[in-house]
Amino acid sequence: MKKGAKIFEGIANIDIRLKPKEYSREVLKTICGNMGYHFGSIILLDEKGLGSLFSSFNLPESYPALVHKVEAPVLSSPSGVAVDSGKIVVVQDIMGELRLKPWRDLLMQFDIKTIVWVPLFSKGKAFGTYTLYDDRQREVPGEEKDILNQLSALFSMAIIGNEYIDETREKTIKLEKEIAERKQVEKQLRIAKEAAEAANLAKNNFLTTMSHELRTPMNAIMGFTDIMLSDELDPGKLNDLKIIYESADTLLKLIDDILDFAEIESGDIELKNIDFSMEDLLNRIYERFIGKTEKKNLFFNIVREASAPRRVFGDEYRLEQMIANIVDNAVKFTSSGEVTAVYSYHNGTAFIRVSDTGIGIPKEKQGLVFSLFSQEDMSSTRPYGGIGLGLTIASRLAERMGGKIACQSSPGVGSIFTIELPLCEVQ
Image (cartoon, rainbow, N blue to C red; front, side, top):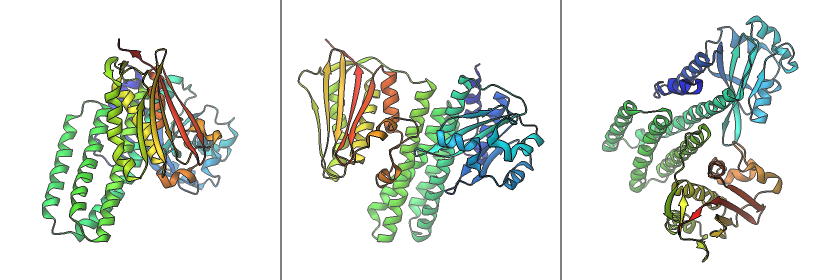
């Protein structure tokens, strides 16, 4: 069995109900055990760039206290390079790495020779690293780096999920105290919790288990919150309920995106080549977004050019996912005007062009919108909730299907995203 398969098989056997710190420690243990590292740790950065230990495996008891005695900032070390670049950093020569000089005596004390820093991300920004240490000088080949990058998404999701779940739990406790008479709802919540716990027994593999166990309670929270929203009259309680619903919805979308991306990056995605109706697909996209656009008073339309075939061969589900991700992004960043999608076809290639009259993207930033964990200026995207992974997933899917996605945009004018895919016309 390959090293990566052993690691993910080991992770799949870890109890997902563990608290994030304990779960992360068990994942570090699995990584170190299969890759031969001596010990590992997860360091998170605060807004001032100060680091704190989130979780660790086999870390010497005195190590954290000794590290904190070093006055040099964490970001001045190779850890800062990993955070800034968003890429794995490996140091095999502790003595020759100038950025490790403040920590050199400490590292020599524990006979550390090789350190690997892997960045962790949330909403396009690195918020820490997970770090692996070895008492041998070792190479880190590309295949091993690919595995470490995939595990970064797992760690990020566990830590981010902890933040959202804590916020949701606090709001839920507050509501339980204020709405004591809703005994029936509390009973249903207990039933939902028991159902979620029972579902743990049915896990099949790492990705499906992670998806099921996190999405089930979120759907329960959103469902019961929606019921309570329809009955509640108190403005203050209504606001709290809306916060819970929006937080759960955000987490659910984040989980879906991370899992989709992890599946694509791992190479497990299977593309299907079937005969399907482009008209039906585009109609589903229209029905999916017309309510949202009408709510924002946007004109929304999808057009099929007369020369474009009604039926083609390709992966219907993945194409719909790509178009939906791009349309969703267009609607999110457009506050007035229109969002339009046009389907055309030329010489065996399908073109789907999605245009909007939204905030637009500066030319120098346009290349970043498809990059992993990168996005346009946070100050401009913050009011709209951030770009997320939707465009990255769409771009990677297009590449896997032999196509590409291009972006044209002007700040204050709008954007045009064009999907270009080789799809055979059904004769």
